[in-house]
Image (cartoon, rainbow, N blue to C red; front, side, top):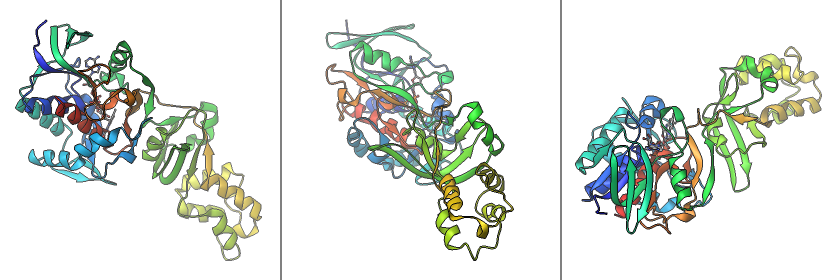
Amino acid sequence: MAKQFDVAVIGAGAAGMMCAAVAGQRGKKVILIDHATKLAEKIRISGGGRCNFTNAAAAPQHYLSQNPHFCKSALSRYSPQDFINLVKRYRISFHEKHKGQLFCDDSAEQIINMLKAECELGNVQWRMPCSVASVGKEGNLFRIDTNAGEVIAENVVIATGGLSIPKIGATDFAYRIAQQFGLKMIAPRAGLVPLTFDAAGWQPFLPLAGIALPVEVEAGEKKLRGFFKEDLLFTHRGLSGPAILQISSFWQPGQPLSVNLLPEIDIAQTLIEGKTSIKKNFGNLFSQWLPNRLALGLLEANGIDPAARVADTPDRVLRTLSDAINRWAIAPSGSEGYRKAEVTLGGVDTRELSQQSMMVNKVPGLHFIGEAVDVTGWLGGYNFQWAWASGTAAAMSF
Ligand code: FDA
């Protein structure tokens, strides 16, 4: 069996294109294989079509993993500024939207074209659409059987991502290869996903669908406890918005979320201390603090007549109301799943990989990068930064 390529990258998404481009530009003979008919659909739909391509403040603490130190090496060697410099070189204009999140001014398509151009600079060969039937190791080489013939390469990089959004081509390919080579896995689950409630339990909240407001939300256990101050959105099936997408990655089935619907005001303290001076009734007072429909809905759910006066209400009732709004404990029954999840948590256990090269310790030449690996970023450009950084880490090792 004779070597045809130094590197075969399977999966031409964010991580795969980055890895192929960098390896190609380092003089390696690279082939990039993908089964999709349209290139990098996930980049195209990302950030509402404008691709939140990095986060200027991305750092290891913005990532979830069973092995939280693993991502440090790749992230420190390829920083958000490195990607920003690349974007600037291609004269792609961008803006910061919120908390360091950088978006293209025009279109995510510009990022795809940039990565394609970088691959061209590295003379990367393409096989796409092309499905891979098997990957096997024979001596020091890998044999990849595809529907367009076999590929023999010295190194294989698995960059086929996670399970999110199957309708645009997500598969469990990476997990199958990991299993084939006897690698440990961290069970995958949907992350950055809207949370749902059983229909009967959610009935009282249906009239609130469409309401968005800034909240504080908390969930998870000890080391993996999340806390976010972002917007929450009521939907017909449950809760969404950035606050919920963020906390969904920390939430475990069966656990409640703790939501502060009015973070700027400690209701018990404000109402009890100001009792004699507050002239407004509950309806007027709470409509000043919260969207009107939500204020009235919450008062009704807590058995409080909006026309009642704060001054006439016992402290005990005010404390209960405060708990219901400042510490709303609510247990989702599930999530919208991979159909709507922006990412897949879990994946190949990082303890199987070298943090320098992303290579499998016990299978020289086999690498895993991007979302296939148990490193998952928060919402806000962190996941693409991991794709760029892990792809570059592998490419620099060839
Ligand atoms: P990615 O999924 O990009 O690529 C995998 C590639 O492998 C695909 O091209 C696929 O076709 C191919 N493939 C899969 N199975 C295969 C098989 N069996 N054979 C051959 N090829 C196969 N992140 C962020 O930082 N900012 C953002 O704005 C967004 N926005 C966003 C919106 C939406 C709707 C989603 C679903 C996700 C995001 N993300 C995001 C997350 C981000 O898109 C994601 O983390 C990266 O694309 C992961 O990069 P990978 O290269 O690992 O996988």
